[in-house]
Length: 368
Image 1 (cartoon, rainbow, N blue to C red):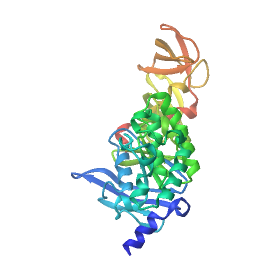
Image 2 (image 1 turned 180 degrees about the vertical axis):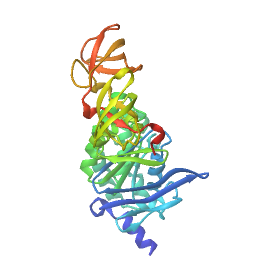
Image 3 (image 1 turned 90 degrees about the horizontal axis):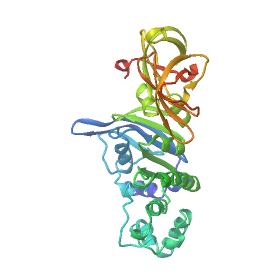
Image 4 (image 1 turned 180 degrees about the horizontal axis):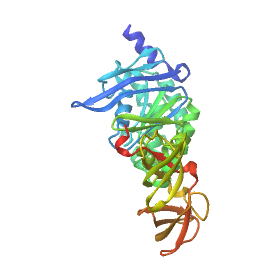
């Protein structure tokens, strides 16, 4: 029965795969939960980003899917087949590592074909599939070079080709762009997404970079301390972070204590120091008068309007198309404002923020 099971997984291919399901997957190290009851269903063709800071459990989750770490609780299913009991080589997944993990003494084509050779695939079939994989990653002209003769971006393409050549139902990527420079990272984001669409398989992509997650994923899974905090589309996670921690991680640099004055469903009226009044949108149930406001720097506008309050510019940094201002306001704190309008230190300005972009959360001590 085990051999039949293994054959089903290895031979599933991208067309047979419908769904990967993680059911309360947990992993402990020395009694501490690195991953705590992660439940997630990944559909065929989806691009999922596991997002969070170092130590949040995202790489642990990926290694559990790959079979590099045994579970201490829960199960993993590929369609109706349970696979967490199988060793990595029997799961049939493609893996792309942060450091490429290429064999320096083997040519590009032999690196790409290594997994097929280990599986006993016939030489003619290996040649055909390696050629197709190199065509997909646009490295045909480099087939006979050694990895050391390639740029970092080209080496990463070789690692991707090696992952897709086995025609896996799922490709797992662990921070694959972190060793590349900023320009190349942006180029490789588009390239990985293109390859994902061309292959038609599912991709699980680990990153600490919110820009990568937002640009590439169909759904983003935000994690903290081994626990999933939010699962949603990039638009949902960006515009409606579920917690204050997620808001901070997604670039809501302005976090201010306020007092709840009135609530009518999602819409709330708030009061800050010195009588400053704001209208906002509640992201969590508010059970007391205390609350916290989160606003992105690029959603604060210079000028008169709703939610207006005055401030004095303390610093102004030029960033090319826009300025990053630090403005002292009646909140007795510095607000960060990103704007195309020119302002200089000492300028007295009025600031406004749309009520639907003034996100309101429970005080941090009340967060789960």
